[in-house]
Image (cartoon, rainbow over all chains, first blue to last red; front, top):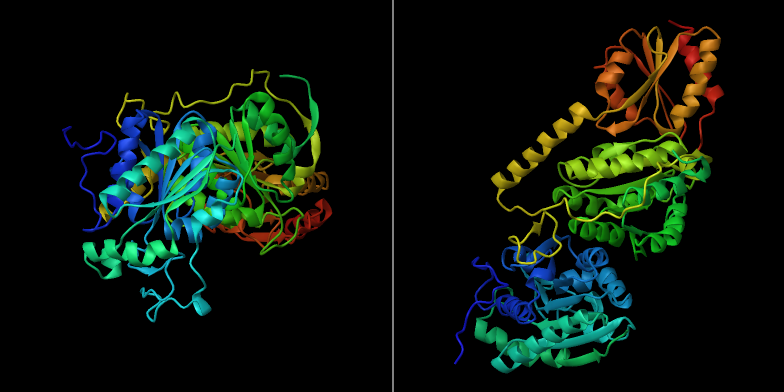
Length: 246
Length: 355
């Protein structure tokens, strides 16, 4: 039985995430992949505004904090300066699918050789639980107190489905981290994204259906159950696109 | 120096950027700066650099943010409405202490305004280039040669002080052709070798680097901003530039920058021929503002005339520079209208004949 150790690519800092939040799991998975591929020293993370904005304290690789939604553009600048380095963004749903829609779509369609970790928890966690572009119909948030009404607030964005239509995308896969099996699947997908990048095969995005017990008003266990019962039916898990673009 | 070439201001600036080691350019089309992008899209692939047309001005400045974080010399260019879009990114660049060069080939505003030359972004570039307490270096060239010379200086100064540097040109300087010389040096793309703070992969040879502008503890943020302002003091003390002509005995001193200074200077020279004692100060750095040079030049003057292609913006800084010690008059055209030397001469005569 191997020892269960903290990955080298994670620092010793105590994370600020709420109890039951799945950011910690996803951070760990990214760090394990950096360790296993031995690329921490060649990796640059770009972490924009959102709950994970302080990820620069948690990842041991070089990290850039970015403006809200702009991480794919920042990552493009890093990658064009250093085409042989590994560049990843770590973005939430408000960041990636609302204020940063243009940046993610164009980084994807350029086939920018970066890996995007996309945390979809159907809310703006950091600012206290407002409606996100991925908030489900009927979901109560601080700014949809009567539930999201598609007639008024429109429909949730399905990011992997949308980006999978673009020629520059090598990998678009939706995963979750609600039980050991799905955590293993998520790690494999993240690894695959970095492998695509290593082989210069195009843009990769791994969407992780995640929890926000604090803003959902749930216990951690209830939050995991909600992902299964409400989110996965609207956001089916799976590979939406896979194959080198170049 | 190599032999002279006839070039547009925008093209001369672009060529000078390459010769200054600018490895990456990120831009978005907008008149009247388009020649910069067009030129670099041709040249960059041939010299081992990167030209990338971004999806927006916002993306372009954030690409600069990422590239500058990597310690590589990079640049973006735009014109007035596009600069407004970039201000978010410029604030982050300043807040993260990153060096880069930003070009503003100004056009008339506000809003979509027009596409003819203007100087109506002075307040924005010197006082509010984004949210928060910060400054950018601002150079105001007045010829095609200076478009080339100051881009090179801007890169050096941005690196030295780890801050953004702006070339504030206008549509006239960008579009007009003049002879220009470039230093006879080999083109060498920049690398991060002298930037130990760069986030370009630690290679397990140093602790991880962080590029960041977020500080949630007020005391810590205050300290960081104060440190930055100490650096600004050093810049202010050592790097303000102005060109002063005919001011020793001048009763009237004209203050103008950029292409307007060229027009004003010919008006001043005509006035001198007519026996009016008039001089001219041309601020070359708009931040830091050449306070002492203006103060000295206006020492014996009775009146000051500020000429701008705007409704009067730099005039505020001129009044502060001379501590409102004498009357400061203004003549300006705006909306893309270029003041004629004859108009400026008439203003000088009005002041010079009424001492």
